[in-house]
Length: 404
Image (cartoon, rainbow, N blue to C red; front, side, top):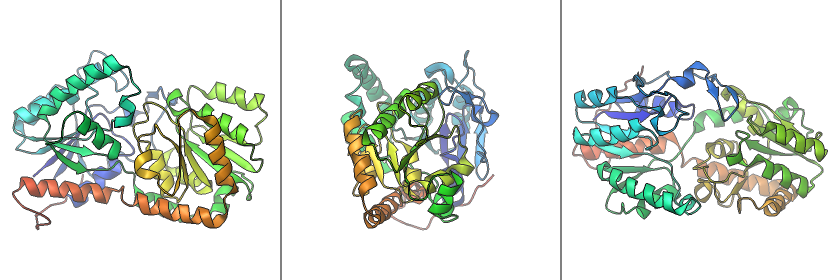
């Protein structure tokens, strides 16, 4: 049975999964609503034009559909993507498994409804964590939940990315539906191979970080959701004189960050990298001794945490971050979002820990992240294919490769 995946645009985190899936799960095709990410368009989060330096279309079958929105863009909200041609395409396709990434655009909703009407099996892979729902305005949240309860009537299978995401579906009454674990993942194989390409001392030399310094890494846009100023304030409060803070990213808060660094005289201990493309990320992860994500509402997962774990990094993660309950065990610490004193305490605790403890935490990060992989996703999707073909378990199905 064919798998059709609907996505808004080519995304650097997802395309390696599609390549892997095409080679290992059979007839797979990705339908895109926009090609903005291929053109190097302006990204409001990074406050600059972004063009990824990896091939986002290599190794799998794909189609682009015309966007009929009056204001076409992935950045223009619900009505930014209206791809009416998808309805005709769904009608022509033989029965397939149609995986839709969320409900954030008109096209998503149309695809969920019409795929069901035309006899396809609708599988939803969204990312909303349950714990963040209680942080949103109550009236709007209740209205959204009523709308989603209706939309979920068209969904047969929920591909949950983590435990908080599964709890969200259960909260909305989906107890009788089919759940399949399809974890949010990055290209673990690639990152672990890159981790072995250079030593930590070589990576620190590349960044001009003193070899004995304790390197703290943040990776993300300089925007309110990511709360980079929380980390700067905690870094100042922790007063670990031998530490260096690397803020890997770019964004609208850069001027405010620079002013804070200047006012607090942190110029010698904080590195602002600017935007770093995919092919150079590994140097920064390898140089780090701990990874911090201090995000607030809206950080539905946090895939840079996955990346950091592939380098064996211990973690300090805010409790609002969607992946915290899945990825942080004995390999790190969870602190209350916005609690700068607690974040500073964990920075001090990590910097004072001995190398043996950090090695144990590193091994735990690697153990955990291997369960959040492309392999796990595809093996679980194979079970879904087998079920729809009338087979059970790991029966031998002729799954052909369909690479572009």
